[in-house]
Amino acid sequence: MRTIDTKALFNNEQVENLFFGPARAYASLTVDFAEKLTSAQLEAAKAYTETGLAQARAFTSVKDVEGLRSYMEGQQKVAKDLTERLKGDAEKVVALQQDFVSKSQKLAEENVKQATATKATANAK
Image 1 (tube, one colour):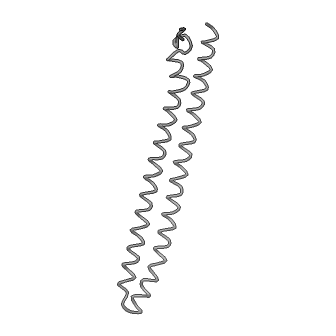
Image 2 (cartoon, one colour; image 1 turned 45 degrees about the horizontal axis):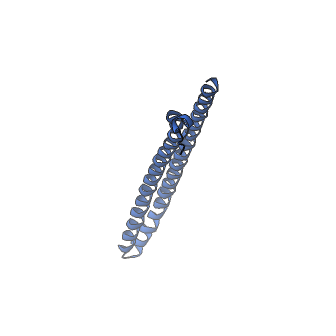
Image 3 (spheres, one colour; image 1 turned 45 degrees about the vertical axis):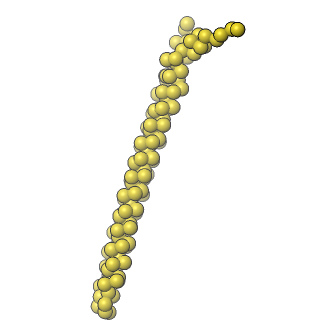
């Protein structure tokens, strides 16, 4: 029976440089992005939940017309604060996405350069 010499077919270093290394780098980048995005979402959810609960508590403490008026006036500030929070959270997510895209493009460019260099080296042999 004839055996195939895999070392002759594939240079382990080439396989690592062309396939596994880039795949591992992209997977790491993706996991980092997912972690940052999840963290931002959890932080935002916690802040929105705390605001909602605080407003519910404030409403339950209304006992008269004056208290209701005060509560309603406070709603304008809460709405303004939430709007600012939403804007900041959206900007944070956009910045995370832009960073991910930028790093992904850089990684792809580096991998193309590496593949080109590897191909040129293989053709020279």
